[in-house]
Image (cartoon, rainbow, N blue to C red; front, side, top):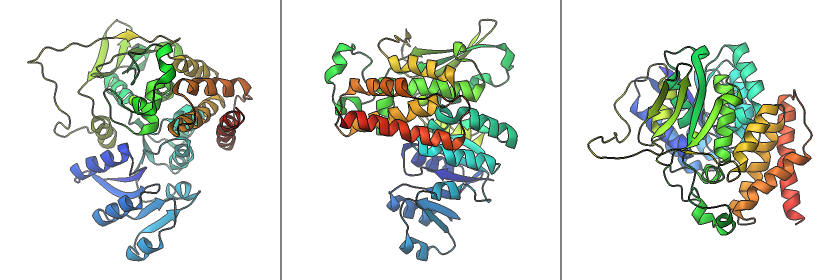
Length: 381
Ligand code: MG
């Protein structure tokens, strides 16, 4: 029985993770969970599972007296405290944003395996996390469809035979629009993703393709592959979730109808991926086609920036992440236009101070600096 602590339980990945746990009660047990402000959902989880420890932003004294056998964490440091609990095997980190970084690091230091849906952890702190993973002998598994695909394609192969990773991208909501046409797109347009249904932040990151840039950085850290050997490609149908090309010219691809429950389950049950199909199976009795298009870096500058920033390493990932978070937040609140997001990110990186070997605390403070920097240039505009 694998005991699971799920952070970000009420989000899109979180609720699907809960479904997977319910479907595999013989192998998986939810022992802890965190929600942000959705305390109704926390109560639902408390009713359904016998949770040993939980977190929510605000103190829940009523719930705490109703569930006296559960330890309740809350507040700014609560997420960092709950991961130090002993009685769990796997941390599923489905938090959104940089708040996911410190809990992952502390859980690794607490010798817990990690299933990571929180990109920011590796984008901002990949060097520190990888070092900690090595020192503590834990397993770090991806819950991103692309990285899960790569992990699956690598099974049974030697790393030295890998020529490159090919990461597929849907191209986002505006893949058929030119740069000029992006000037007046609305928030509603941006939130309408063609193939995946996800949270707001990641849907915007998908439209700017910042998300793909982050995934390139994630892939670099997860699979220890240099940036020069990671190629993004636009594949609008989102059927192939990513590929691995080997030195002999063979390309392995993992495909399925898009459904996040597949990569979630792969990580949760790893290395025993068993179970009935949880996705709509592909229908080969009908004709269908798959198309591929190179990524135009001038159309999607944030992908190029991510590759360059990734090559620098140090504190730049954390700054890129903070600047993008804040710029996307400004867009989601209707304060800036869609095509201004990248400008804010670029301006922030240009002003940033580079450190090659930052500490975890420095990553946190540079992330905060980047957010404030974006907020200030917007306020003074
Ligand atoms: Mg993805």
